[in-house]
Length: 132
Ligand SMILES: [Zn+2]
Image (cartoon, rainbow, N blue to C red; front, side):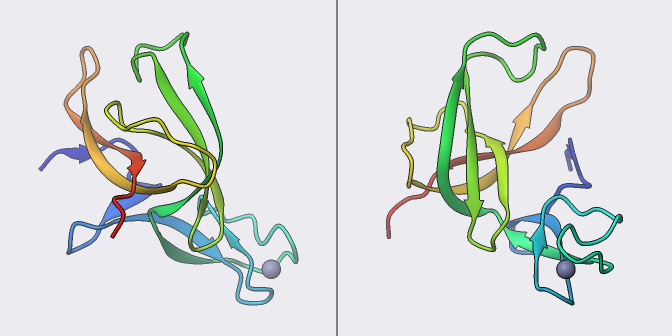
């Protein structure tokens, strides 16, 4: 099995669904991503881990043509995504994802990535959700 690039941020469950590893506040019901141990940003209470579905709605996007690192290869698209479970995250589109617009539905998937002098890994990317 190929290792995840950031196993502290996401995981794959028994049904091959991607889950984001975040946090929820038991006092004020705030939700946060990623998980952190400093306490709730609203009320200061200790947070509890919570898994979020890797699905949400695009609120902003930017196409990147120049990037100092080799990975991800350019061009790529960064989106701000409001997860169905609440938190807003920044994420990358898959390299073969069709262009998206504000309000589009995206779902997460794990994709194989290769970097020079590194073992193969899987990383989280988002793509347009197929209408049902
Ligand atoms: Zn709180």
